[in-house]
Length: 258
Image (cartoon, rainbow, N blue to C red; front, side, top):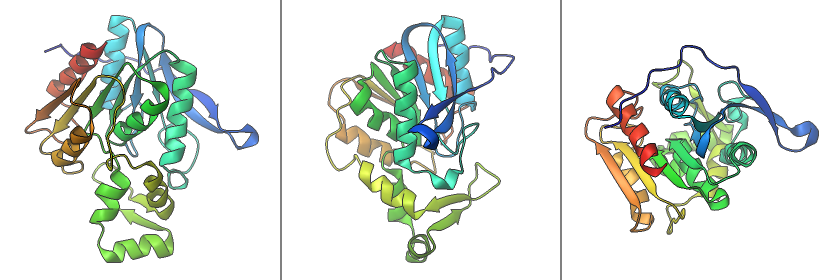
């Protein structure tokens, strides 16, 4: 298994990139490491940010290998502009597409974590990636992992009040789940039919993940082509998969495509 490189000692300042038309453009924070090879693009999870552990580990790997590495904070996330509750899947997909078009115009390797796995699959329809590495991919999560699991009283609150605040083990503040998020998510559902990103896919999934069950990842696998799809199941792995062994598996998966 590939050894995990040491983390960088200092953090680089982010660049704010305008996304959207004219005066309505929002500023999306990006970090771009120049280098060789197909650029690796990090697509983070729901309410995560581009300086999280897995992204930092990949950045350290890219620095050590001289590889190009691109990461971003979606609107309302991390260092980007905006109120989180004001955004939807369409907005975050647009952010990813704009950053990829500007900083990774050749066929990139898209690495998507949780929601970022869904974003990566959606973006693949436009950018034709060289490969996908998906960590606990939360494909269709607004419907399959939220709405379908909500009891009737929570569904009613979302529809009537426009928002329900959900406690999160990953944040001290509750996560707003908006009606706009749920309704917009339905525009991007993928699991109802075949999914062919046209490139190799490697999925890393913890079997002890309470947020994206491994059975959900298998639903995605069933929709992917029979060729060039690898699944690594970590029996005691949680949702984060940020321990040293999991980070080494992540880097090995990227190197296996690169």
